[in-house]
Image (cartoon, rainbow, N blue to C red; front, side):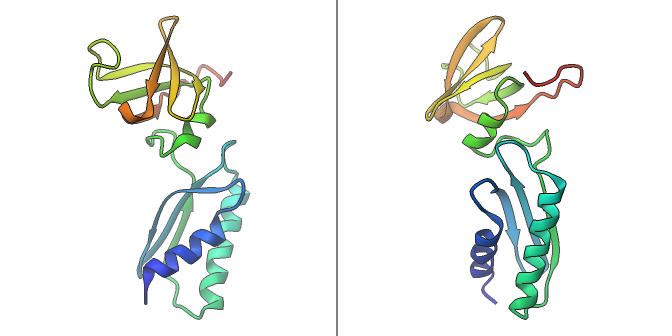
Length: 150
């Protein structure tokens, strides 16, 4: 069994104009897809994706491994550009590649204000700082349960 081919086939089934794959694992013992949309993914969408994967295995007469379909957790690092866009207005923690970008800080926290193709803007203590994606090791949401997204 060529699990790379299975993975490619399943990605085509899972992804559409709104839904994208954040992370996937496909092998003989596990099929795991972490999926999202720019607005966040609903439980009903996860159930539908799970059914599509099950049907694919049945239609191709392949013994199905364990199947897991989920959304990214709020504490997971942003996986791509779309995760930044989804979280505009929220507090984030950014780990930088080097300290030359913003003072001597390797980790900064602030409110994500804008996202462009090559960079994003974060508000820190009332000041906007532009950060290039190429200078970022990782970014994560800082969930503030007392504050709602703007």
